[in-house]
Length: 400
Image 1: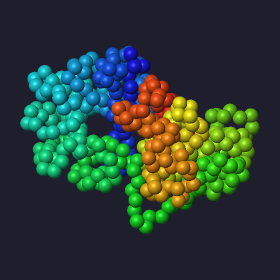
Image 2: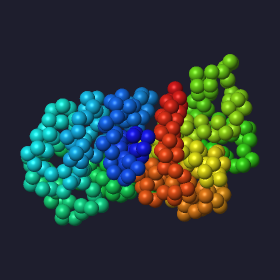
Image 3: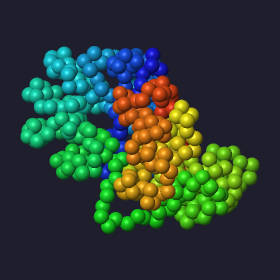
Image 4: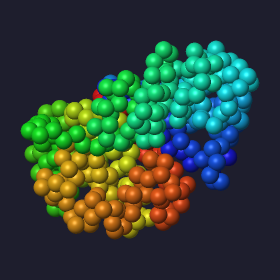
């Protein structure tokens, strides 16, 4: 059953930090990749894939390709017809290259499926299918040194796109880009690129000030109005949201103060963050999506960790503040006053807040073995599904 399948998604980015697709990572309750994902009706499967790969890009809704692992059994599975336009088939490393699999890969390629080879290490047997392969995925943590250069040399004659898996830092991203990789998978985009002498932009200063004030238990509408008004784009977009169909108001709202009073502080906190992250900062779109989803998951799971929803939402955003502002996390308190409990959670994953943040990040990153067990996995899955949809709808509203 689909409701028994755990799902996570990992973004795949190009050299410009643009997200070009998501690998869908999944397992059933017994820990095995499920054939049930494709055994469901095509409509159900398509809705599921769209929900996990839909993004807002430059104001437009897009469905990105889903990269999905395919073992030998699934390779010969009857795949729904819609999938050719939406799915990249990742042939896993233990699929034997023989007469039957070669014929099947060629058949799927002719149907329009893009073919990727996962965890690739060169073997002469691959020569029989390389003309049908679109993407070669290399685990750069496993394949290093001479073995990596040998593989790249063997692939040079073929018209394939190189994808580096498990890229976890900006330094690694730049290194593999120079080696000819065009696609990258990992969470390198969520770590700070610290450049000596780099100045914080005006939008970033306003965002820092806003996050600081939102973290203040004595925050007032008047103080928030002063901060928001410093960035005309932020103020204008908040007013547009309040006056949009999202709130169905009886009359038009024309001032930030009116908007704050109408929305209330809790709602305003969420929308101010959404708008600030949606186009004002010079950061990858994927980081914005990641933090909004994380924040919403923290908010919805707060009660399981004896936390307050508003604080939990803000902590989800602050967990990426180092990447947002290119500062080490340990220095965050120099810019944004935070409590000891939040600091312990962000730096050391300690306390109830730290436990929650660890569970939310681990679940989203397919590290389900690192979950604390405090919350049922299905609750986390439901929270994740709702958070993805909320982030998508909120960014769409913020782009008006």
